[in-house]
Length: 428
Ligand code: GDP
Ligand code: IMO
Ligand code: MG
Image (cartoon, rainbow, N blue to C red):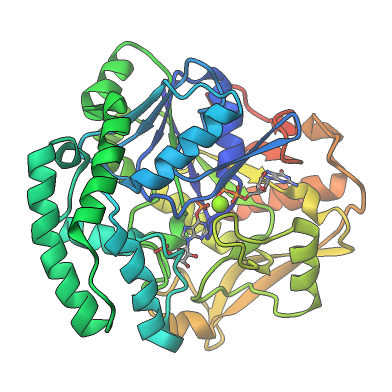
C-alpha cells in the first residue's frame, strides 16, 4: 500500500501518535493535513516520551520525510520550539517539509482565541487557545497570511500591517484589550522566517511525486471525527476537517490515491472541552477510567472527560471516512474493570435512532443503549498475539467490529512500540 491514513474516530486523544509512529517504521513520508498546535500526540519509544504538536509522528525515524501540508495552521514559534527540543534529544529534523501554502498563526490569533472564550463565558467551546479557530477564520475571510507570504519580507510586512490595523481595532473595541505592536511582531516573525526557510517547499508536488514513485505515505490526522467542523458536535468542534476527506483539500492528494484508512479507536471514550458526550460517566466509573488511564490533556493539562466506548459514534466515523480497519488503543486501561459497557446505539423519545442527531438539543437528550461485557481482570500489556488476549477481551472487540461493521486491524496494549498486536499485516 502506498497511501495510508490514520485518523481519530472519537473526540481526539485516541492514540493516533502511537499508531502513526508504529506504522512509520515502514513509511517514507508522514503528513499532517489539518489542525495545528492544538494537537498533542504522544509517542513513546523505549520508555522515552515525545510530545508532538505540529511535527508529524514520523519524526523519530531518521530519513523519513515529515510534511506539514497546506491544510495545517502553523505557529512558527511552536514549530521551532518543537524542532529545537527534538534536536536537543538527538533527533534529526532535516526531513521536515513545510507547505508554502500553509497558513501562519500570528500572536493576535492565540490572544483572540483566549479573549473570545472569556467573552463567551458559559457558552465557551473550551478551545486549546492556540489560535486555531481565529487563524482558520482569517483563511476563510481571505486575509490570512501564508508561509509563502512569510518568506517574502516585503509582502509579509505589508500584510501584517494591514491585518494588524484591523485586529487592533477589534482588540480595543471588542475586547477592551491593548493593541499589539507592529514592529515587535514583524521582527519576531522575520526571525522565524529565516529559520524556517530551508524547510519550505511546494508539498503538493512533493507528495504527488512521491506517490508516483511508489513511496509509502502515511497521513496523520489530528483531532477526530466528532471534532470535525462539519461532522462533529458543532459548535463544540475544532475549525478543520480531521476526517479522511480533509486530505484532498489539506494535502492536495486526491481521494482516489488513498489506499487504506485506519480509524484509531480508544477502548473507551474521552473528551476535552465542552459539548455533548452521550456516554460520559460523571460518576465513580468515570473517575476510575480517568485514574487508570491518566486522562489529562497533553496540550492544556485539563482533566479529560471520560466514559464508555461509543460504538455508534465509531460506526458514524467509519461511514464518513471509509475506515477499512480499526486500531484499538488503550485496551490495557480496562484491565481492572469487573464489567465493561459499550454503547451500540441511541434512543430518543423511546425510539432507536438510525443516525447521530445534528441538533445538539436532541443529542443532549439521547439515551445510550448499552451492552455489558465481563471484564478480563488480567494484565494484558505483555500480550503480543490476538489469540493470547483473554477471551473476554476478544468478545468485546468482536462485538465492536460487528456493531461498527469495521475490521479489527491493530490492538494496542501499551504506549510502547512493541505493545502492538497486528491482526492484518496487509494493512500497510
Ligand atoms: P493522540 O492525540 O490521538 O495522539 O493521543 P494522545 O497522545 O493525546 O493520548 C494517547 C495517550 O495514550 C498517549 O499518552 C499515548 O502514549 C498513550 N497510549 C497509546 N496507546 C496506548 C495503549 O495501547 N495503552 C496505553 N496504556 N497507553 C497508550
Ligand atoms: P489530538 O490531535 C482532543 C478540542 C478542544 C476543544 C475543541 C476546539 O491530540 O487528538 P481548538 O483549540 O481546536 O479550537 O478547540 O477541540 N481539541 C482536542 N481535543 N484532542 C485534540 O487533538 C484536540 N484538539 C482540539 O479541547 O474542545
Ligand atoms: Mg492528543
